[in-house]
Image (cartoon, rainbow, N blue to C red):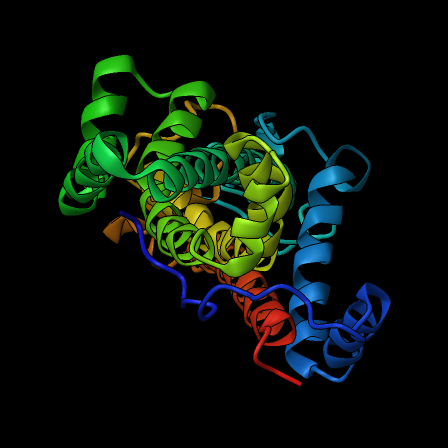
Length: 305
């Protein structure tokens, strides 16, 4: 497991009479508007997302291009220049361009892997919590095994066997990230299935699958949204860790983790821009998703008035 976001509390009960969906949404938006954490998180995450989306327009150079004039006469990286605002690396490639395109890789891989993890965790947790019995016991014992297994070791093994690539990294992120949401979903579905309103739905003749999908899972939406947002911060760090260890997207594709790895060489420490800028990009991205997730957790908490 790469980490467990803070729990959003117990399962949300059905809405009380007199409390409309519109008023609930208005309260959530009101709380978000008043939260500095939300605006800081939204600014950071939207900024990184826009940089990734418009990287071809914003990047001054091809991120893989090696420029003859991108190195000093002794073959060292250039510092800040008019042509290379954030300097170059040891291969004469523009740091700013690689940062912008690196945002595409980090966010793309993390978002896809996180969505797969959410889908897997919610599905398995809901099945185990609703039907329980032997299927539920098997799923939850498997979840316990996955929780106990070191996630980085599992990732190293899978990437080592299959070789680095976008597909295998997405799969690795999904496989090591689903367990926490599975347990959260299991606990909330188990509690919700005993409610009187569920028994009333059964009396009307609705099938179990329909009750679960139409009447139970919607009450988990706030938890899923918060977990997915906080999970993005974890998966961005995890993808960067794999890239730092040389198991990310292969060169010459830009990667923040690989850029940090190259800049951390003892012989390269004098060229501070090689490690400072990709580290700052990673830090701000993780900070943005954490702030946004915290604000959403507070605003969507059903126990708040």
